[in-house]
Image 1 (cartoon, one colour):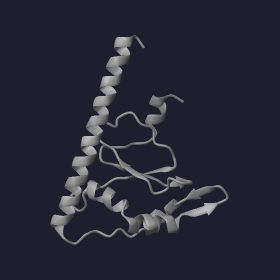
Image 2 (tube, one colour):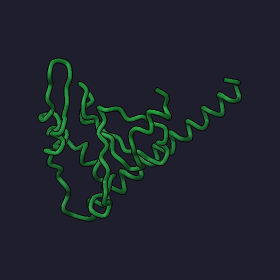
Image 3 (cartoon, helix red, strand yellow):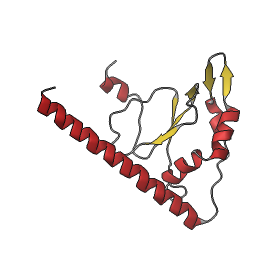
Amino acid sequence: MTFNEASKKVEYKPFDILLVNDGRYKIGNTCILTLNDNEIVIQSHIRIIRVLNPEIIDPFLLIYLLNTKIVQDQIKHKTFIQSTIATLGNRLREILIPIPKDPRFRKDIADTMRNLMLSRSQLLNEIRIFLDAEKENLGY
C-alpha cells in the first residue's frame, strides 16, 4: 500500500489530537496536529480526538488536560492487558477530565500550549526545509 492509498483511509485535520489507544508502553501518549503535519498515516492503535466546538474547550487546553497526572493515572488504571497486548479500548469514554473553573486560567493554559506547540511545529518545519535543501545541494 502506498502513502497516498493509506492516507485516504483516515481523515484528520489541524488541531486534531492523536492519542495512543493500544500497544504496550505508549498508551495515553498524545500529540496535536498542526498545519505542518500534512503527510501522516494514522494506524488503528491511534485514536483521533477532534474538538467540534473550540468555544467550549480549546484543543490546546484539552491536550494539556489529557497529559495531567490525574488523567494519565485514570488511563493507566482503565487499560486492559491481555497477554502482551494492552488496550484502552472504548474505556477512554470513562475518563473524567478536570476542567479548571476559572476561564482566565483555562485561556492562559491554552495560549501557552498553543504558543509552545506551534513554535515547535514551525521549528521542525524549518529543519525539514533546511535538510531538503541540503539533500538537493549534495545531490541526494
